[in-house]
Length: 123
Length: 107
Image (cartoon, rainbow over the protein chains, first blue to last red):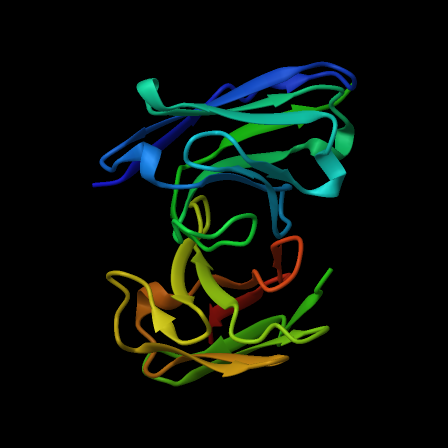
């Protein structure tokens, strides 16, 4: 069974940094692109970033480009999101998601999701 | 960026009825459209991808159709567990975008 478990969410102040983690199990982690998708409270879904199987390619939505860094450690079956210069509008549940299509790049479907971790940015 | 508009915003139906949810793209999305279901407090679940392909384990009462700019998710006979929020998503154009959602509620 595919399992994705996020951690690291917290209440932080604007301008702070935070790193989210996602522990994967139940599949060959190094075979899939992986993504972060976020959902502001009571709002819709927004794809944030994704990373290729070997970590050699990454893509980001414009709203986080230059502030967030996605990375992975295949030996630890783990995905990360380093978030710097956090803004109030980054407040959301952050989901780790598995990309369905192994040969695609930035564009993909998300066929497995974690339960999410809440990041709150507030002064 | 492709903007996806879902309608109606809320759909009130009874168990056993047929549900038809719509998603309109601001430009040609070809068949690069997916549908997700999200229940309160849960993560989204992939239902349909490439406009009409059911994801693994999704019941046959869920079907998708459409191409270009107009897409439809149909639930042939509603079960109590189908009442949720549904989102469409495109991967045709940068970046991946989602619609704002349709809430399917019990009448």
